[in-house]
Amino acid sequence: MGSTLQSSAESAGQFDYIVIGAGTAGCVLANRLSKNPDKRVLLLEAGGKDDYVWIHIPVGYLYCINNPRTDWMLRTEAEPGLNGRSLIYPRGKVLGGCSSINGMIYMRGQQRDYDEWAALTGDDSWRWDQVLPLFKKSEDHYSGDAEFHGQGGEWRVEKQRLSWEILDAFRDAAAEVGIPKTDDFNRGNNEGCGYFDVNQKRGIRWNASKAFLKPAAIRGNLTIMTGCQVRRLRIVDGEHGKRCTGVEFIGGGREWFADAVQETVLAAGAIGSPAILQYSGIGDGRHLQQAGVSVVHDLAGVGANLQDHLQIRSAFKISGAKTLNKMANSLLGKARIGLEYALFQSGPMSMAPSQLGAFTRSDASQATPNLQYHVQPLSLEKFGDPLHDFPAFTASVCNLRPTSRGYVRITGADPLAAPKIVPNYLSTNEDRKIAADSLTLTRKIVAAPALKKYQPEEMKPGAQFRTEEELAKAAGDIGTTIFHPVGTCKMGRRDDTSAVVDSDLRVIGIAGLRVADASVMPTITSGNTNSPTVMIAEKAARSILSGER
Image (cartoon, rainbow, N blue to C red):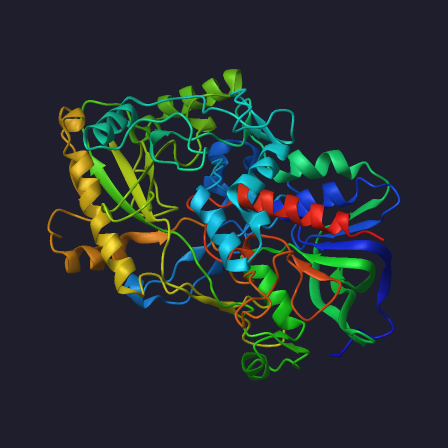
């Protein structure tokens, strides 16, 4: 089935399990699957090691995103919903994947997310009460709250090491308009306003590579190969149908293949996993033929169902409060920031990109919160630009449950070429209405008494935008990804023609092959997606190990 490498290719060996992608999910899988010393595990990563200093300093995300050393430098197509703009689409290019360059926010989502997955898949093991123990298993949470949190696991969760007067005032203002204060977003509902918990350890980024891969790397049965780009999966026809028997890849300027005795697990993320399936001839047959790829298994859902959170960044100039803008725009301020981090691993260099969060409803008809705020004591024109030289804050808001759906699709047979990414942001009337409503709510919070003394002045999108239509268009001008792509290898019932994997994450129609990363989410979680990906990998590993022979 499909072409294979020439006989000059070198064998990397035979393994019980091959895991493709050493991002968040891959690191978890490598750890769990290699715990049995009798099982040989191969972990393949197309990027490099996570040894770049800015990965580990929290504020270093500014130097990791859109940096070819740490980011795949992907872009979306021009988006009609964003008034023709194309966005950068950061994806981690090192061990730890996106957990090495993301915002470090620890967020599970809401109970309703997982109960919905259970209903969509017909599998109650995805219900909130069933997945909560999996979240707790890997967690090492500072709080000691045994009902909702775990201690002693690999995935360290800590409080942030700084606060800001202007953010405290925003929290007070949110309370004044009916958004209560909370100290924990991870009990199943999320409603409220408070500081985010983060995946850090004493002010240093705690990525999946440190948490899960480093402890496993010393095991003699785990082989880790970086700089290895997968060309295709090996699929053969067998007595009982199609089966994945391994993988072909390029690394170190040479061609390789590796054999999987039991399973191959794709953990290359919501962009990488569907692309690898498509290059392997697994996907919508019509699209594969257009790309010049022989159809091995026609599976229409591969690459479809792309969902992402679009953040709409309102920015406000203020007076009478310290923000990062002024601190970072003088040599003395920069020196103080650097010294504080060097001595105490605290201060602005320990900052997650967003410090304060809020979950609320865009209108009373929403049964649970459908909006999330990320509030920052800074402002800039766009990501990558310098901070403004006056005090300001940014209140970004996103629709947690967008109805817009996009796709990821290869455009040719070259596995080294970037796929086409089309999120289709704001392509439904519902999403456009919620975008407008969320901007109106932001203005309501900022107009509350608690913020009055700071004299907030709206810079973006600008007070001139008033009607729902005007605000929806403004959202298209200032909206940007919050880096949460999911859903492109969605799980579902086996009779769901749009499903790619079943509820055990096995690729439908091909034995010996699973997908275990954010791409399997049938619907996006209500919040940041990194820790739900840890849970998905935990669940996949448990399922794989329970079926060992």
